[in-house]
Length: 553
Image (cartoon, rainbow, N blue to C red; front, top):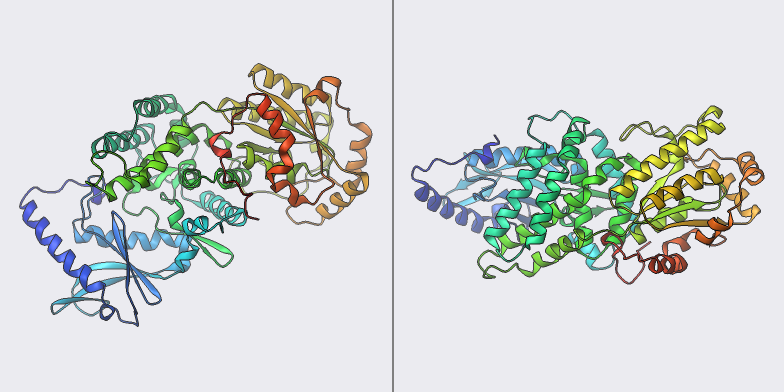
């Protein structure tokens, strides 16, 4: 058991608690003064959470864990706080190394306290480089400065981090079905206790039903190595833009059980916070890029469950911060998360889009831009053809000619069909980015849509022959390009492609890509598709919710 979670001895508990509170107030008052620091501190700013206090002093920031017992974690013992500081330093260097410098002592000097003085430590702090708070993601989002570029960097860093993260789970219970269920139940019970009117019976029933339904999934994910040493607290207040990079700081250090989780649960925190703030377009961008980089489509089966869990966690944090001031009703900061929960458990709107067109017609760029705008999951034929398994190190080398025989191509489309079937069954709209130049391949996917009773549309991409050849030539010079198609392949495609049948043409939406590629990022470009989706009964899911303006470039 984590030492932070061990039950406390009842002996003299109230006396110790009063003495601890007096000592904490004295230290807190001292650390608000510049003279407590061994360097120029200027005006000291103070930021408090339910677990810690951060003092911004000059060029540095000092994080101190409060001596509190929150029920789910007990920091009343100095030894526990020191251990958490050491763990914070070690663990946060994985995703925010440039920020984390050292663990420093807080020493009593006469009637006051100072950082880093000689003497017996009375407490400890994590020393960090101070950053511009205007670059924290929540602040960037509030000022309209968070966009696609930042989402791509976060996805790249998280995919690499999750790929390298240890799979050697230290205890058998971490990430287990029982543990995941217990964590959800603990949040529901805490919210019922702290804010009885916050969570509806429908939400409670959904959470418990999903916990049971997904039990086998949790077991399989753990057995397959997807429970890893994660960050655990990836909301927007814990991400900061630093130059061209993004640093993700303040991970969970006090509880191994909350850090050793499914990688999808880790990602879900960032997705949830974007969704709660009305930027489903950015959440969709982050999700799709992470999936493209990792191939971990299997985790999507529980993604909604994790989004709900993360939203309830943030709602509970908001409730705890305003404890006693809302007479059982959730505070405003919790409301947006609770509203997201209600939207997330609503039945999804599912459809299937098939990309159709020659190499160089713009299918990949267009579908990558489209997917987050309509809440869809994109599956790339070129990338999946070269993927061995989820989180495997990607191999960008051209495949041998044997990978492009008629039989090999047919087998590849069958794999894409199986993946698409799984995604549709989990309740996500899907865009399949493939050529679909043969009638037999289109037919199999159209039959799948009819079997699942969902709308199927064909995005029919067109560009002139000169444009196609130019794009294929340029693409061949890009390192890491997943497509192996060259001009000879393009010529073969134009000679052997099966034209759309009359029935297929009725499903088709023509996409003219003789436009700058940046046009695909604008919702207005996809007006015809949105109109067809709406006519079929499509309702924009939570992952397609966005602000009125287009995503920032």
